Image (tube, rainbow, N blue to C red; front, side, top):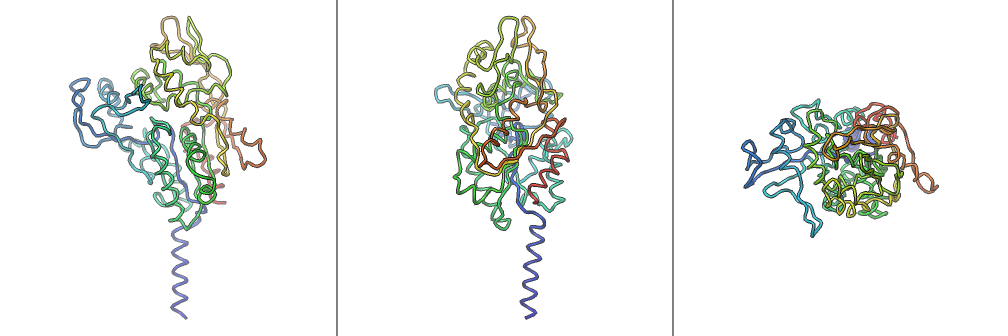
Length: 399
């Protein structure tokens, strides 16, 4: 009798130790530029003598040492993708091989450049705060990094990995449904996954809820500046002009263009000779001397354009009352290569209000389980490390 009692106590203790207060394990889908990219080189040509032709695996994104003047030319040559207009496919440059490290763990999304934690910090506060509630990195809280240069149609294999990760997280946490936490571009990636990859029966079994944070549901105005003259992602040492070829070559940039369905007809790009709205993309790409951009935009614009409800419990989190680029104005002769002046509207500092609030459209149907929570005065990139946001997430996953 004592033996069986001890066995029962042992099993119960193991269960409580393993799962603690965790009610729902978490899988995190990071945002634009929020996953590390490793590269290995075997090239025949390079921009100049400081660039390596061959290498073992090394961090391509992000490594601050690669972003300094002159050396950054090597980085751009390795980072920018190559477009095949015949097939519509994007690939790494010849002799460049890439991989996304850390899938299933959280370390590579906690710090993007571990050599400079303060610069590369991302989900570190979120993970550490959840660990205080009993979450174990790599077990009950896991990361699903991806190559953020691509759209879902470019890398469908990622969603097979994501599905298997969610299933494994469910099973290894006592068959507890998984909460999907996504940030920024990761919100669109997760929406595509829920609407276009997995069945309703699968979602009912494995998904507890979806928590999108700062979702750019209808894109962002600043993406047009990225195509025209470049955008440095608010990294001080990174030149916008150096970043432009990388942004132009990433199909995800086209995916984040403001959607004509949801945007006003006000000009987003203003020049001395012509203005460009969401209805002028063909002319815009032609005038910045990047006509294939319009082809790419047409290919990706419908990926999540319908914004169909994903048929899971949804907790939308977004910011407000932060000055956000709504229009860029180029002086005479500066378009597209000069630095524009920015005019601002409401949003979270990166994504415009028009885009963030679209979560509310799903609340119009009584059959949809949707809540929205606005956090004023919190910047887009700070949302996942802000303690008030994290505390709110805790109320969802621990209830």
